[in-house]
Length: 579
Ligand SMILES: *[C@@H]1O[C@H](CO)[C@@H](O)[C@H](O)[C@H]1NC(C)=O
Ligand SMILES: *[C@@H]1O[C@H](CO)[C@@H](O)[C@H](O)[C@H]1NC(C)=O
Ligand SMILES: *[C@@H]1O[C@H](CO)[C@@H](O)[C@H](O)[C@H]1NC(C)=O
Ligand SMILES: *[C@@H]1O[C@H](CO)[C@@H](O)[C@H](O)[C@H]1NC(C)=O
Ligand SMILES: *[C@@H]1O[C@H](CO)[C@@H](O)[C@H](O)[C@H]1NC(C)=O
Ligand SMILES: *[C@@H]1O[C@H](CO)[C@@H](O)[C@H](O)[C@H]1NC(C)=O
Ligand SMILES: *[C@@H]1O[C@H](CO)[C@@H](O)[C@H](O)[C@H]1NC(C)=O
Ligand SMILES: *[C@@H]1O[C@H](CO)[C@@H](O)[C@H](O)[C@H]1NC(C)=O
Image (cartoon, rainbow, N blue to C red):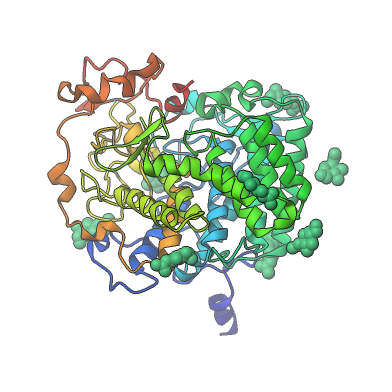
């Protein structure tokens, strides 16, 4: 009797915030078409936040915990690290395939911890803090294993090219899965500093450090010993990044360049120093961050905020910390000016390098050509955060509204009437590019085998529509339908913000079943009728895009689409062609 009670009432794991019993599980997509009663917290935003975190559970690698919520997932890749006599199992699969990549994972985790620090009470209100904690620890515990000694960081597990040749479930993942590292003799400034930034940002969250009362404050998951452990890793990695010769990590590990080649390291050094300044109350660190800003000429940048480039986030964080801790000597108005130069360009126009497309989506030339939603969501996330400390009332309002417009677009207020989060509404994508979820194992026919995706990849934000707002929902079309760890990250923060005080539902509750079906474009993205979508500059730019999409209508590869078919290759090539 007592044993039973103990079992029932003891927390699932003593090491973290206890997971709810029964667990939160995503409801059927049809529930996303039912308007809520409009109270705060809004149940539709809470559910969306829950779904967005649940996606990460589906991406888990290694031995799954007893609390695994995704019934169709199995233990997998449990021997990762054996080639180097280490246990590097665990962590997350990066996207629609089975490689594990430290650089984009670090960015994802940094972004989520930053968001959960500023708008963390949204996670609390939605009862999602235990899952946030669970997700962060699954990431950070693996990153700690990957940081196996002071000056060693494993940056990738499995070879991208080998992995690309496989399409199937989690039971036959190709072997071997080599472990690639940076170290004192083969360093990588960006990867080491990027991981340092993630550890430092999360140490701040686990320490419950609040920036200022412009924000709701951290999610309630404080754990001092965990925060200290994270800070040790942050400090060591920062020291590794700054003491070893400065270089891009793919120059030490060319295999990492196949998937996630980095374009610079000044931004990672600066953001790592900034999060560390705050974690250690160090004026010196803040000033180091300011030095990197000048040394690497980061001012004036108009491009995306993403796994590769953290630059647009820097003035925001500089300003937040300058405001929170004047003893560092940061000049709040200087950082506001730089942040507002960037944001004014987006919101009022004239920045260059991007435009707002016909349907309303913020679109960065080049970077938005595949996975179009990620740049827009990252901008919205930064705008919404920064709007709290903008210099004028007009900007507060205009930045807020612009961020809202992008969130609305992503959640269904777009020419397709499609909410781009899987399983959230009857009009959500049905065919995310995910080897895990598809249920198929015929690499020549991934669109049609099986006819219907085997498992619903709840909570996955897909790549997004093309430049003309068209979304075809084809499994092989990775630029539009792939899911990835970093795609979800900004929407977690935005959803947490909405949970805090939005009475209005996410846009999709207004969409009845069939809205997308009525607007879905016929055929394939590269049919002649859509020439401007494929033959045009967007997809052929540079000629380097080995756009590996098997357009397998009944096994027939559509001809005449040079550049659009060939070997299967995922998301990584889209990054490659920018260089
Ligand atoms: C804090 O985290 C550590 C490390 O995961 C764990 O051992 C400990 O039990 C946690 N403490 C609390 C109070 O949850
Ligand atoms: C969701 O509900 C609809 C309608 O009630 C049903 O047809 C469908 O099979 C359900 N989907 C899942 C994944 O359970
Ligand atoms: C997990 O294993 C079961 C049973 O073998 C299988 O049906 C399922 O497809 C597997 N899941 C994945 C993602 O491969
Ligand atoms: C250091 O990293 C390089 C590049 O990944 C690798 O070839 C080398 O074996 C590593 N050195 C040690 C001592 O493991
Ligand atoms: C919503 O919450 C944010 C963050 O706490 C706050 O800045 C904003 O003013 C609130 N909005 C409304 C309408 O209450
Ligand atoms: C690792 O770094 C810590 C502090 O960052 C230092 O105390 C320790 O001596 C280092 N270990 C080695 C083996 O260099
Ligand atoms: C940070 O350091 C300053 C002095 O440099 C000190 O006045 C302040 O109390 C410290 N803040 C915290 C939170 O420790
Ligand atoms: C901050 O910088 C502005 C110029 O951007 C300058 O006018 C102001 O005096 C500076 N404030 C302080 C406290 O140094």
